[in-house]
Length: 634
Image 1 (cartoon, helix red, strand yellow):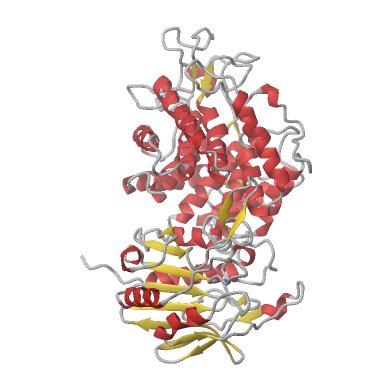
Image 2 (image 1 turned 180 degrees about the vertical axis):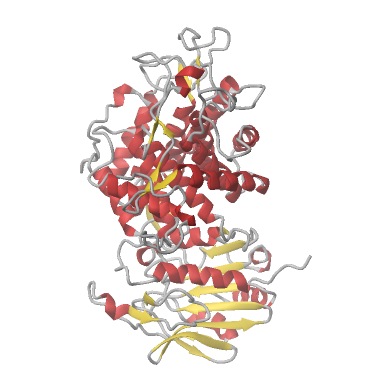
């Protein structure tokens, strides 16, 4: 039976027997993962192999809003996590950093679902780091059974989890130690000639694989550098912008990517298993490391950690990955070739870290580390598509008129309800990612809007202004705010107002602002929905809508309708009700709807039936909003 149909399905001519594929590569690889590992990921024990695949699936879910990917992550974790937060097969006293990686899925599930068992389980892993054996200066041993050894792999296994835990659960003192792991690893492992890092370092210099003068392993192994590079770009989003060691991490990343680009194969755009010996007999182009480097370069540029000059290297490599490692079988399933199997140094049987050892490792099809890294790289490349459109401008989310607080699992009072960082039903994390995909920075305005703070924003979002039952210290839109906001719009600002239905938001003061633009929110509540009778909240969108170009059926329940006068115009009508309106005011634009609508509960794909296009509508809206931002003249 023919195994390989074609290495690059994007070049398939029409009508050769395979169905036309419109899904991006990230989703096609995700579909393979949940198909071939239908019941569970490989292995029976808690491991990092599961963790890297789940990181890929999490990224695909956040980019696609397809609920089946979230369900798979949750099912995979629930095989291990008990209702009391214990983790089946996990042994804390093994003190292996490999056990930490899957903790990132626990942090993710806790933030999305709120289920406390995931927090408890994540806290077990966090506790392990307190007792993790360390080198004399404080570097984590990779494993207790590998004394005195730091491996590049360990930075990815532990540090992104460590940084996210510190950020989410307010343990800011830990950021020093997170940064130090990277700093010490680079100091000990960096090759002065190439700028690349050796796989492992033995402080004692006694291991057979260790150089007796430096303590370093013998080879510049590609995937080890990939782990370390991915760890850097995954830690930095959680690292406080004012932390004194953040600059050191950025400098390490920028030094490393110079070396990564310098070792890229010029013909294929890929990287070899042993990075500095590309032309030597036995060496081969390796898939997982190539994906990891693409991920690092693309995410580093998107987040602003790296200059854009690295994007051509990322694109060339990604094209090479598709050409050389993607295979489509007779059933149309995407398979991923070319990933080196498990690699390490020391242990039994002994692994000496030599060139011959690394190049002797056989490649595996659909190996977990390759599958996970390919999904991560693919999503990052997909996120670059519209990155130039927003030109790095800022979208400000109001947190002054909407300023509810609650106590989180640690007991600390934090803002909640329609916030960028919120990943649960109430949050705007999906909407925020869409803005970021269009090259816009998402920031929060915690102060009253005025001419000074608004001038830094291209767009300003006001959502669900507080009433006393939600916030006893509710702040109202007063005349100075009306003046500042309307003048800002007149000068080219884009105002987005997502109100709520009567009884759940403030109307009187908000309508004083909206009167400037010919819009008034009615004190009503339409599209009342009983239980899961979603059709009661359905609104159909005709083809040719000037804003919603791809969404055809959306769900909006319990919203206030609109009344309009000049210069406002309706953009979406349901029966006799005006649902969405816009207005041109001076050089600026106003968008208004009587519901927060685009929050996670109705955009993340977990609740609504698949025929509802709320996620598409959110993408349509952001695409339209970006076009309303006046272009700066050069």
